[in-house]
Length: 110
Image (cartoon, rainbow, N blue to C red):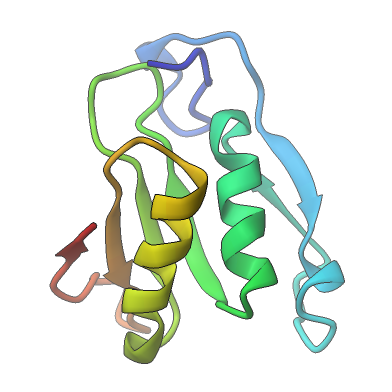
């Protein structure tokens, strides 16, 4: 487990603040210049971005024994994201497809 602090669930504890990462370094066309990531998954998410996979969000689980989640923008990217995460992290991950409705599409566990 990590010591990350959730910006929207501070009652979960944790003392490690989120890490701002320049999203445009990976996706220059994006309207987002920076995004904040849970510190314990920064390197894994950056590896996914380096593989050309755009994400809509992620979560490490914030100090609890839950599986980290990564939301990819396109269904075609689920399998490759799972591969990248397996290469860069020993944890199991839930990789989901983000939808504009805000409801995640069915997940594919790594």
